[in-house]
Length: 395
Ligand SMILES: *Cc1c(COP(=O)(O)O)cnc(C)c1O
Figure 1: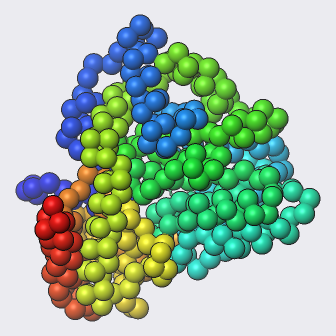
Figure 2 (figure 1 turned 60 degrees about the vertical axis):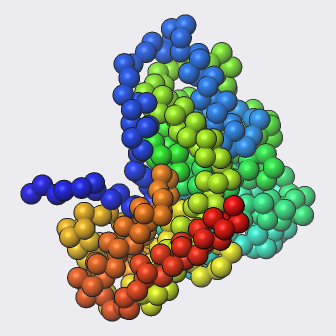
Figure 3 (figure 1 turned 30 degrees about the horizontal axis):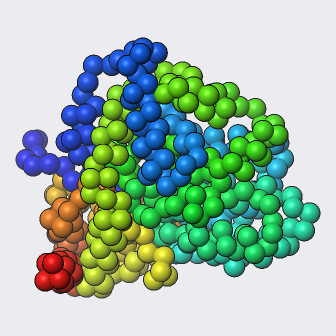
């Protein structure tokens, strides 16, 4: 049966693609080796550098984020190398599984999946590694399965305090362009990202930002790589081209996304996400439900994972909301399947989008008989009214 109105895609990636980006992608394909292509190539390659806040090369792959995870490892590591990884949630676990398949040896710092990576524990593990066998520390900036962020600048400082030479590899697939990220300033060595989250694009592009140190370490690394090889990319990119066929039309979209982010201003984009996350937590508190992340300074600006009461099934709730409100929320993954649902509040959204999104949750909680108090939507509106009022009065 036809459902009137737009589907609300409120999962934490892919995020809804703004009409402006859809229009930008809707173009005839051009010759990626022709004389006109380099303008587009240079435009997106320099644009993504500004988004990552780096003057270092950013490589753009035609792949999902998982490809860029693999690229980060196969360009810097040799068979059997040790890594330090932090199991902040499902995505950190998947990156570890990938490292194992590549023949690497990840040592794991476990968490309760309710917080970001602890810089002190990373420092301790590096200090214990007196022979410097660990070649990289791998952390997820925004853990999309739990709604917690890791404090990358603090992790860098903890690493520096030890004098350990390991590289810092950061997955900011769902963080970039929604949560503050500063590649150069924070001393990240490889940052991994994707197109379908904060960049508001369809799935299909991924990124590696690469430090000088990562390039130098990579020159002596021996894991086989070909499609993912940085050096071929960097050489062709210098002229505005790619060594193989790029996802041309997604690059049209990427250029538009960069324009949109810069028109709003990255700092305003980050503040908007933080404010919507706080409004969402106000709703969750009013419903009497629990947020998955338990550390105040580590709440994600991108999504909020909400725990359902004991004995309730979060997937049943999501199914009811989809059927009755035409709204999609993210499911709980692996360890927390059925226990949480995830509200995406990333990308091109405003106060009214969020109010609609939270209304779908409140309707669903009622219709699926999940024990809760009403008034969550009102609490979020009150929060958004008060913060907007403070701003308009100050202006
Ligand atoms: C989405 C996501 C991934 C996986 O990206 P794919 O594009 O699905 O390959 C990895 N890590 C994080 C943190 C993510 O949010």
